[in-house]
Amino acid sequence: RKGSVIITGASSGLGLATAKALAETGKWHIIMACRDFLKAERAAKSVGMSKENYTIMHLDLASLDSVRQFVDSYKQSGRPLDVLVCNAAVYQPTAKEPSFTAEGFELSVGTNHLGHFLLSRLLLDDLKQSDYPSKRLIIVGSITGNTNTLAGNVPPKANLGDLRGLAGGLNGLNSSTMIDGGEFDGAKAYKDSKVCNMLTMQEFHRRFHEESGITFASLYPGCIATTGLFREHIPLFRLLFPPFQKYITKGYVSEEEAGKRLAQVVSEPSLTKSGVYWSWNKDSASFENQLSEEASNEDKARKIWELSEKLVGLN
Ligand code: NDP
Image 1 (cartoon, rainbow, N blue to C red):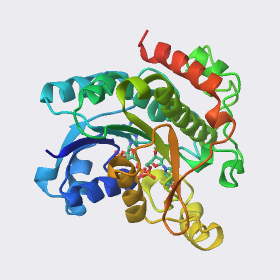
Image 2 (image 1 turned 180 degrees about the vertical axis):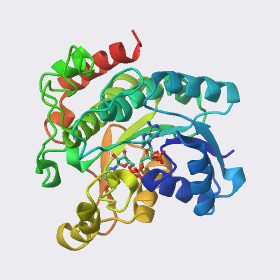
Image 3 (image 1 turned 30 degrees about the horizontal axis):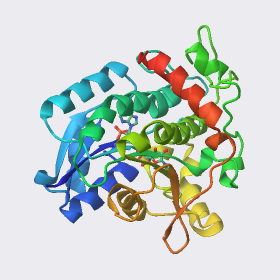
Image 4 (image 1 turned 135 degrees about the vertical axis):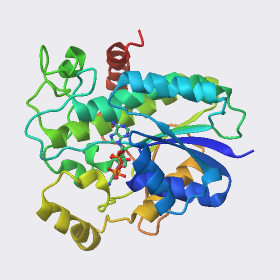
């Protein structure tokens, strides 16, 4: 049978390019988990995906009710789940004020981390039950949250501090909107959310890899400077960022190439190692990359896991 893979945020950028790459193999049925049905349908058509290779299902990660409804509908569909890709993200580098999810969490961490945390926890049993030869849970990470790299040291740097803002609910009422308890900063909130993504992947690995055989992985696909992620940046930035990444940092990667990389992490028989953060070198060969101190801190990973469980109502 074909493998069944859910990709969140498959309506643009990396998620769409990955859906396309997997569809082209003919070996996968892609469930595009998207907040805008029409946009997702147009996107799938625009890259030439044929109808029998994909299904669009509604998912708004900025609402925990929507996450629960998505999971219920998925279970009711009777489809097996072989791979889950947590890819969607929001990035608000120029926001002066925070925005919030339906439950009142700061939007970047609420969507990128908490929404995906609940989704993957609720779908873990379905992954466990899959009889597919290699079942995987993939959470897209980033270099920007990784302070052992040059890009990760561009201010404002990711820093989760003692997690006091997360413990307080990130709501701006009786707590800060930032995980570390600091002043709101949209670029930092995104980077913090990516650190949470990378820590969550490792915590999943420690708790569930041995018993379930599921491969838990994260990756940095390269700098895909052309995606919608930068849509809220100032126009001058959007003009100069792609050539800067292409010619100066040489970290630039096309959406198509990045999609092929994530598709490898979904399906390559050689990439089954669990607990790994994949990156690619100049020749587009994959390697196991190192994470920064904070993005591999076991104590923080456990605390974030426990605090996140409380916030999303899992205990
Ligand atoms: P895009 O903005 O193109 O794609 C993000 C996707 O997330 C869109 O499909 C968007 O939906 C979706 N999304 C946003 N909010 C929600 C929500 N509340 N519910 C459901 N879906 C939502 O950005 P990229 O393709 O660049 O980003 C994809 C991943 O790659 C992210 O995890 C990002 O952190 C990561 N990444 C990107 C890099 C880059 O250089 N671009 C580098 C490293 C990592 P919609 O289409 O409706 O807006």
